[in-house]
Image 1: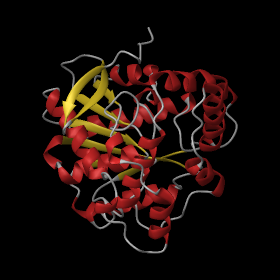
Image 2: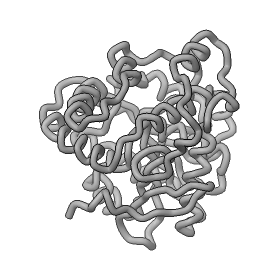
Image 3: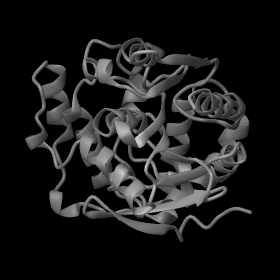
Length: 304
């Protein structure tokens, strides 16, 4: 039965409130799913979560700060993302003082959620920006991580290949605030990010976008999250000290975070393994669920 995404639970964490929900046996090993830039927790599809829980895990998904139904930091203002991006591309570091928060703060949010749920250690699975947040959790709070799965994520190193132009364009295009405009844009965004032909997925995009619209849009939060990514810089050198057993999952046709970025993470985390999903772009269409779930569950079992 499909859950009601408008009625999540809430937990106090790191000075804010996070919306979350859970799947599976509460006594099973916990597995925390972290979603990417400007993307609500419902992008972790309920059926995906149920299937993962069916492999023997208590699966937890949540809205990051500034998205969905978690706390919106409106008082922090809207950063000049274009200026920050230009500064970074010019090789001038963006400092944490220039942005409302960084990925380190978002990592602390996730750990605060574990605290609120009484969880000492969890398997951490992050997608895109969520993968970068997962890396930060493993670096900042190593005792809280059973295993790490970094999916379609980068180390943030500036010498890695950039997004394809069309993917970068959809990333930086302002979000329409009206229902029809938002749904149409999300259909375009997902078609670009998935890469290739996925007619079965495209048939579901409008309904998925409508669910996100109903839960509430927050373009200013998207800008603050993007600024957090820019200001957080490279983790490449720090990854050498990452102790958690790490799996990197990446699609070979990812147009936003090219596969070389995933390879870079795997190369710099000691003992990391990498699984390449053929035909996968920067999304998790249903055709990828079986290999991705197998990889996540298998990694958790092998690392016991």
